Each structure stands twice: as C-alpha cells, then as structure tokens.
Image (cartoon, rainbow, N blue to C red; front, top):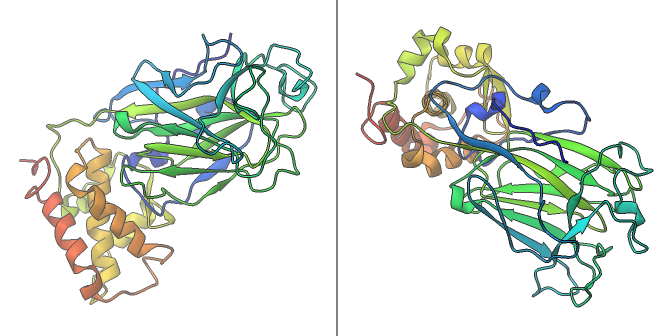
Amino acid sequence: MKKIFKAVVITMVGAFLWNCQNTNLDVNTDQSDLTATKGARTATTTPNACETITFEGLAHGTRISTVTTTSGVVGVLGYNPKFPTVNAATIFDSNKKTVEDPDLQTPGYGPGNTTKLNNILIVQENPNSSTPDDAALANTRLELNFSTFGGVNIYSMNLIDVEGGEVGANVKFYDAANMQIGATVALPSTGDNGVKLITFTGAIGVTKMVVTLNGSGAIDNIGFCVTKYNPKQCTYTQGYWKNHTSVWPVKGLYLGSNYYTNADLIKILNTSVAGNGLISLAHQLIAAKLNIANGANPTAITKCMSDADKLIGSKNILKDKVSPSTTSSLVETLTKYNEGKIGPGHCK
C-alpha cells in the first residue's frame, strides 16, 4: 500500500491562505518526511481535509478525467501534443513489468526508487492503444483541477522517471481567476527510473495545478489541504496588529515576491508612510493577510490582494518608493476590509 500522509498542520507560508499572484514558490526535492516542511496551523483555520491523491482502485491502462477524494472530485487532464483534443491521462500500474516501460516500475533500479507506488499517472503515448505507455514528447503535461474546492494548498507530489534530457519540466499553479500563483517551479531530473518527493511552499489557493513533463515520466501522491474559513471571524486594523505582535498567527509573510519575517514586518509597520505609497500599501496588506491567517474570510479582497502583490512584485518595501496615487485605490479597499466596512466585519 502507498503511504498516505494525513497532514495535521499547514506550511508556515500557508498563513497567507488565499491568492498571492507573485509569491515565489520554493521546491524541496528531499526524500525526507513531509512534516519537515510544515509549521503549526492556527486554531481558526481548521482544515476540512488534508489528503493525498493516490490514483488507487483503477485498472492498469484506465483513461481518467476525474479522481474522487474525501473532499470532493478533482478534474484530471493529460495533454499529448500529437492528440491535442484527446484527454490522455492514463493510469499505469507500476507493479507491472512491462516491455514498453520498465523505467516506470516501482520499486526499481533508479535513484530513490525503493517504495512500491502502485498506480501512477502518465500521459498516454497512443490514446488508441489499450497498452499504457508514457508519451516521450515535448510539451506533454498533466493538469489537476481543484476548482470545485474553491482553492487548496498543495504541499507535495512524487515525480517518477523524468530524466536529464527532458529539459523544461516544471509545475505551475493557478488561482480561481486563472492567474498564475508565484513563479514557475522547475522540476529536477529524477534519473532513469528514479523517484523524487517534491515538496512545495507557497502553493496556496490553488484551483489548477499544471505539471509539464516535457517528455516521458509520471506523477503520484499529490498532497493537498482544503481549508475552511470561519465566517464569523472578524478583522482587526493594522494598528491592532502593530501593537499585538505576540498574537500573530504567522512567522512571516510574502509581500509581492519577497518573503519577510515577523521582525521585518514589524519594522515595516513601524515605518512612517512619509509620502511613500509602497509603505501605506504594505501596512494594510500585512494587516489583511494577518486577518486571513487568523481565520477571516478573504472573499471581499481576493482580487485586491492579488493586484497589490502584483504591484509590489520584487520591490523591497523598506528601500523602494512608489507614488501614493499608484496605490491609493488598493490601500482604500484593504483599509475598508481591515476596519470591517467590507468583508466579515470588525472585531468588537
């Protein structure tokens, strides 16, 4: 049987629990236990479910378009550039010794390939054939659609038999507005018949995950969490968070594409605006993200936060400057959210 990781915690960066368009995504290819990549969750952001998609219970060679999890149905698409109108997502039983794909066998001879993975997911080379065989073609990709969940946090997957010659293998994550979340994550070579556990930090609010294999290979064990927001959780102003740092529910946040520790964030909150729109935007964005990490529903400002992160981009909050006229609209919306004029309401 596959090892099913029942997660009981959320990543530190997962404190930003929604849409962060320009967040940098970190990737870890160690074979170590997943708990090494997670930090404590907050009491108000209770996971509805953290589970792993294993593709079990399906016959070798089955073409699939959905997979059912405890939390709901996930859409599955396999793109083969030779058959662009056909869903080529196919189950491959890695226990089988096949002539076509001995390099997909688990356990096997490749690096890190010591565990029986059973069913794995491939892009079928010839959709008209009943014999599963992974397509060794450029631009092959697998897509998982979580839109029925309203967004999930993706923390891991297994990558199988992606070799060094298959340059350009990567993962992209998208939000509900079909905007890419963070940078494209380059995937490493596993080596022939190799297996690597890929862990992600920052893949938050994902409705679509696109894995471009750019050749042969497979994926498995996609770990994700669905998070419920407390609809009664209220919001606090940036002044409250500035003066109550001991109750912050995070250890740091992304603002644009840069990560700031709590010490950095406190320094920003204590920095006078002094005609710098970047500082005034950061003050309200920090408060909004802290409110969301504390359990407040972000629906009212999802697009606004995405736009704010896009505007900030790679700018250094403490060094760069932006005209207040450029940020004023975003600052106004975020301030209304933090003061309870929109969204779940202000804490009494």
